[in-house]
Length: 341
Image (tube, rainbow, N blue to C red; front, top):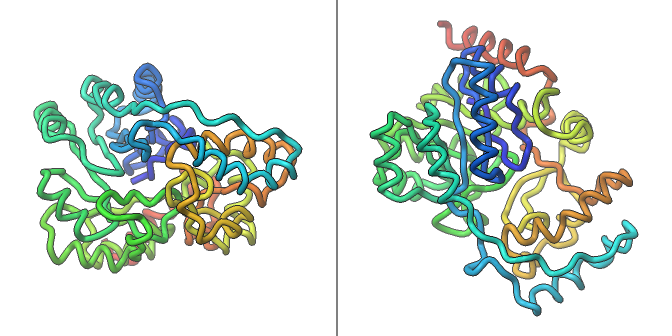
């Protein structure tokens, strides 16, 4: 399975390539409007008649009313002013209120009926899950702990994605703080396999046929691969992002809230290092992302790479392939050779 990257990192062509070659393409749609999801779905269907996955975030805001207080804003301004000064740009105004988009987005999922609807940061309502099952839409939820897997199974999801802390991107924890969900993929897989009957998809730190074979041997029914595909030319990542994933810098990743307000893994950066231990001062998601957007834009323009969080998992240093089709072929051949079938 192709990891469904959010925030414009997914690409229609990569989804189609993975599905056409026997995998399951995945598109992260949590930043898209309902109309944009429909447009993306139509484009995918024009390139493949194979199954694919559309992914949403059940909880897309950590602020109860979608706002930040003046005190919170003044505090974050004080912390980040040196970075904005370094980039020679003005500090942004207090982020505007954010309204959740999930309910409108999920209605589109029910309308377009992808073969698989996956979700992170929580579980849709029982009514939504029931509608999915009636419409023939398979469902998959992400778990970062055994407790989350048990709750997902109780809710009746069809598949559970065991998301290890090696993975790039956000930690999709929803029962406890993400900092308490730092369990490795293969340990998490074994814990869940022991207690859960629902099929399991291993995710995090998987970038080769050898790792796929290991996951299958430990009881996984499938795997989801993110960073290895994010580094390919046909992902939605910027060229510099893909270059960074093949650079020496990719050896050093960290979990940080500094860039979005939610804990996520990417290549080490100065703000992530400097703000370690000050997580409570960070704005709630997604208002921190809004606050940081102009700094990211300026840093990209000025090539100040150490001011940017380039998403990536711990597996990046072993990546070899820059074409999704070649990566797929390699994964299938190596896994088949090891598993002997």
